[in-house]
Image 1 (cartoon, rainbow, N blue to C red):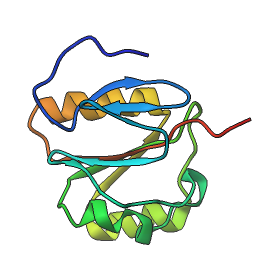
Image 2: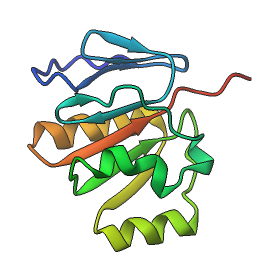
Image 3: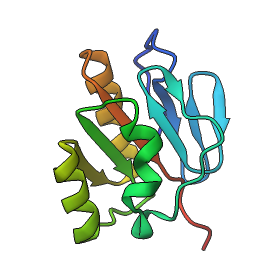
Image 4: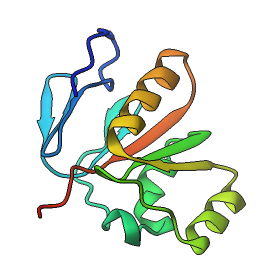
Amino acid sequence: MKFTLESKLAASVRRVSATEIMVGNEVWTRPVGLTGAGVIPDWTPAPAEQLSIGDLEPLIATGPELIIVGTGEKQVLPNRELMFAMARRGVGLEMMDTAAAARTFNVLLGEGRSVAAVLYVAEPS
């Protein structure tokens, strides 16, 4: 899926496919963490279905009101412990397929909202 609306924000997602995610002019073939300031460097979270609060700490540290998780081609629901831990931190958590997560991240970022995201490419078959 290609996003045609150009954004001047360095962290905006320009394209999502089953095998890669384009953020700005950089292509990622592994999970990528994003904030309004850009990509979280040297960060490798657990698989989406195994995410823990520890995996999300680099994103939480940036102070977002919401973290969006793009779980690949299909939505994966978070485990209860993660939902409770995020609620205790006062940070919203939404999990959806990666294409929807990328669109949502771009819209909220464009609105000036404090948002972060982790986007996964599809797992190999």
